[in-house]
Image (cartoon, rainbow, N blue to C red; front, side, top):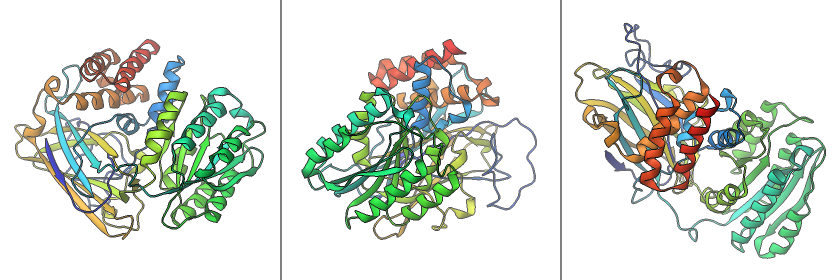
Length: 481
């Protein structure tokens, strides 16, 4: 295990992964920058030794899948994103002493139950930003854009949203400000930007919400961003927070048109955060909107979970530690036969664009962590360095770039899985639950009964509700398989 922190602010998380090769002869090398960005499956360093992607802290895929499994239904494989399963769990990486990233790299052999060559190793890359006391954060100007269409007419949808908003308003500072926009057939300004010191007016506006009609999400976003722009406050964290089931069915339903609007406003320092609700949920649209809006998306299905997100996680996103953050892992051709990034398919970046700060990356707030898992097949009798991990980001205030890096050697990946850090084992169980649910070649290398044992053992060690829930979800998936 190695730890290194770099100077300056920001940070975020990171999740990668990689898998073993089939042992076929290496192909002829090709120019760097054309690498394997658009490919899936094991990659050979002789063809492209770089794996590059934008950082992402979304967790909606895991939370949505959890809701489906609890309802006795398997998720659509297209909604399952392994990196979001991994990043749903706290890692407790050491924080940097100053601004910037703490880079954590470790790994192990695979569990005996994993069907892979003896040379295949599990590699974990973790990035951690410095946390922040709630009193140190900037004041916030938040515009909530709330879906009140007929599909939201349910206590577990609109009722859940109202409960979470009431809880948040009571937790915000008096100097913070909140505006409320709703949309069904058309958008409506329910409450202009209002200081939280006038919380009675905000609570009354939340209580007034009623559901009915169709879902004109495009009009809701346009009106929401206009309201946020009208109420923009210099020196504040300005955010639009979309709460919806993501099922646009009237007005502008074309994702690209909505995304252009979001992109333009995000460039003006108004980021978009997405909160998905509902068992029928437009996952793809909500994820794209949040990615293009320099934010993230989560999914909630119960009030306890919603309150936790609005009271604990949302305030932690109101400031930024890093803008346009990207990760790049360079594998050593002398020691690595193949690698595979598991997940992050829609966040991959051309290798040559790692230091191109005009290319969009991810935004990360205080105290966040990103984890990436790789399956790496080593060459026989390999020794020495396996890979170097680099992270690059822009300071949110000065827009100046900084980088942090760390390397990992064969010896760092040689411990037995059973002796590895317990949180690494949680990462493995979460990632390969996703792989199993997605299906395909990788799903044949693991079975859910073995994953359930790994998760149960970790739950017994950690005594954390989130890990208990993971063990339960794997068991539910096993019963549905």
